[in-house]
Length: 241
Length: 217
Image (cartoon, rainbow over all chains, first blue to last red; front, side, top):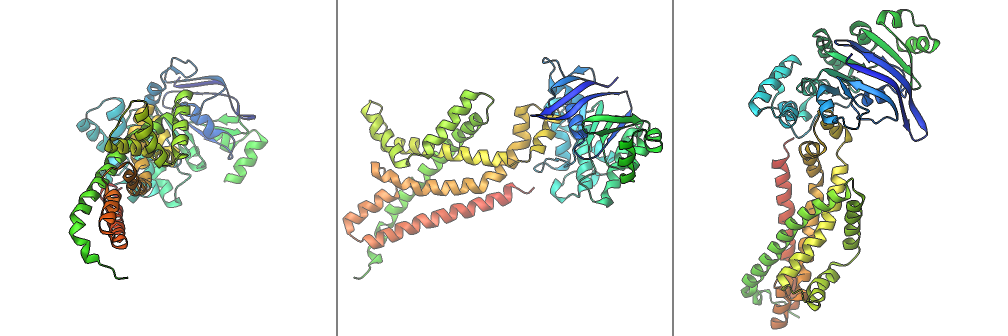
């Protein structure tokens, strides 16, 4: 079990945004989380690497128990890559420097080694020719691919994607999804919050539908898209497709 | 009344020498003060309440009292309790401490304006808080603050004229001396003002040039 979540509750003041989530993810599994805005899916994802704190429940990820106060979050995060909706590439660093930074500072990889590995990752995301440019010259899709390469540079065991294509032009969505699909095929364990139903249907092993801070329904893509059980799921899917 | 600028020209070297004093006093207090300001900002952003209160208190006290009064306190006030600084040191200390409060606020605004997503990206990669600050937040923050810092530098430069009240031989003090020697008040202060203006303009121009070279991104 790579990720195991039990009874996760999260409150912002009086507002309870996660009302008891249980979830497991196994090695090489691709889990897509879908649901309307405000359903708590991004918040849930952000709890998995403790960018978001939670009130009740346990999260175990790559063998680290996030509820134990002794757990070193920086060690946890080495194992858990994250890709954000807003890319968050470092504007003052070139593409290759974006990718080299964390390996050099966190795992003390030499500069030459970090560069070699970074170039290999850029090749993987199809951006070798952009290695030495600054991010401002890139398109959204290119920035997001840099962000994916940057996360992969830490050689994570799990990748978390928080609506990775929501801020992109329709034309560039495909290139990012393409990279993610390749990653899934290579056996990366992935949790993807997304509105891309096509991607969820085609690439994921399991789909989880969230609404109002609970998991309404989950199953294989065929089950969830083909024969949704709950009214809420049916209503959501009929609007999406 | 006729104006005789020609009579003033022989004094120009003295003025330029005094201008140099103004410039280096400003530059020195700006560098020291900005460094202090960075720490005051860090105190304000600290996890520890005591440090936050110290930072906040420092900024409020300095910003809500006149630099002139601060200078009197350092030069005359401390002298009374047996701590004596000469005029140069008094001005350097006063302007540094004063500048620290203003730059702390500039740093705070600039750093807070760095998108939080960058911080999160740094933390999510496993970098510690301090590593994220140094490698991710600092440079975009500096870029945000540079125009305001330039402004603060110029303000500090113009304020260095109050060194004249404790007889530091900076530009304004020398202008006053020349005025009482020659009684060419209008000419002397016109040229003095022009020297301040040209220097300020050069600083602003230089800062913009640095910005262009330093921030290719």
